[in-house]
Structure formats: C-alpha cells, structure tokens
Length: 164
Image (cartoon, rainbow, N blue to C red; front, side, top):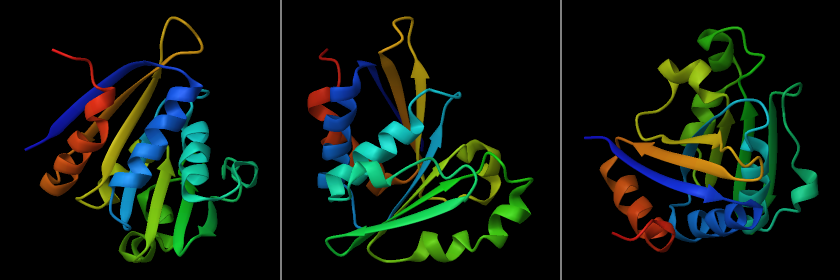
C-alpha cells in the first residue's frame, strides 16, 4: 500500500517548519529520496533538515562533486548524497550506501534519488519538490510504501495539510 501526501504553496519559512516537524517526529534512522528539477529546493530542504538537527546550515552544500557529505549533531548523523553525476546504480552502490542505509542514528538524504531508485531501500520516504508558478513557492509530494513511516508522516504533517 502506497501513501501519498501533498503540501502546496510552501515558502522558505514553511520548508524550515516542515523540516522541524520531520526531525521531531521521524525515527533516528531514515532514508529520504529527494526528487526535483534543478533549482527546485532539494539542497535547501536538506539545509533546513540539518538546521533542525543542530548542524550549521552553512556547512551543508550540494554534494554534486563530492557525492557524499556527512554531518553530526547531538548523537545523530546526516548523510547527504547526490546521485546526479553517478553513472548507474552499480556505481552508486560502490559508494557504500547500503551501509549508510543500515546505520543507526543516521538519516541518509539522497538528491536525484530517482536516478538510483532500483537500489533504494524498501522503507524509503520519497519527497518530490516542484516549483509552482510563483517562483518562491514549492509543492512537496511525500510517498512511501512503508506502513510505519506512513503513520508517522500523517502525524508529522497533520497541521500542514489542507483542511477538508
């Protein structure tokens, strides 16, 4: 069973609020697949999540060329990967990502994750960010087939969801 939730018309302040809710509600081990066009806000959302975890957001940049950056704060690790320049799923696995997926007290966030979808774990939380007609607004679609994540997601986003 897949769960899909949609939040529309988010601005930068809303992205930080969203990140705060995710960090507050989700388990200490999580894999997030980030999808969106260039400039959609994938890295901005990772910066917001890192800030909510206690990492200085200025330390978090796009890992397009380094492929992996890891940050630690308060006993929690945030692994930030970028699959944009990865040739294929085999090259992605050679980075040792399966160990990252299984690491306790760690969130693994992968930009351009749709390029390596076939090797993502079953319990991934997918976030697709889309630019709206107003360039400062975003729509974020959340998808997961994991029942536990689905329940936590609904709780975390309850106040941000449209009423009705």
